[in-house]
Image (cartoon, rainbow, N blue to C red; front, side, top):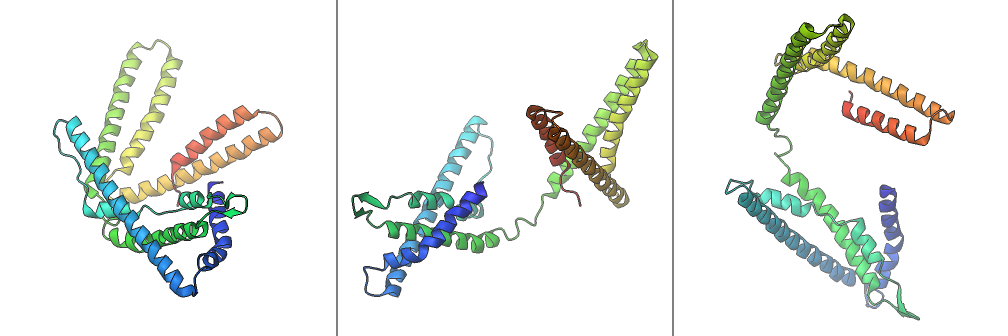
Length: 276
């Protein structure tokens, strides 16, 4: 619905824009010189918005850095670079909110009295929106050049090492718990059940250790196994969802149960991530 309403706003703008242009130049002698001056007005307003946003970004960031340093008792904080400031500035694209605000201006302010310069307001707002979109399409790729393609390998290495060490710690803890349980558990069936559950959990952690193996062969094999497991799990989740819909159609479960189980299935499917 959000996308539909956003598209509807721009559809209304497209339907009214030709009449707005005519209305803007209706009191002038020629069309093109008037449109040129109005476009210069749009450009001036856009530049003012850029300047205000840049000042706002710098001010808020410096305030956040100051508060963080004060809260951390003088520890260093991340400084805002010029590129980051311009990214946040150019990324402030005008859109549906601006257009909806200006189109909410009434047509009349009284009986037979038009709202003054309403068409000019809509023309300027639409021009600023289009100019901000064009400027973002041109400036953002230039500002992001060399940034998006430079992953932090050190951080990735730290994350992999942390996952590996935590998985090893979990396996050691389960092994210790297993030895403790086998010495005090009087029921053999209960002990066998505990062994089976712990073996299942430990197999998941050992799978994580295989994924974080540094050798290329182990990485390739772990990736294939991971993709196969994801596809199978995704297939099973979709079968569960279809069966859930069938149960609801036949009135064997209620709406509350459907909503709860469907939410859990959606969360499980989202946790699987993209499957190639």
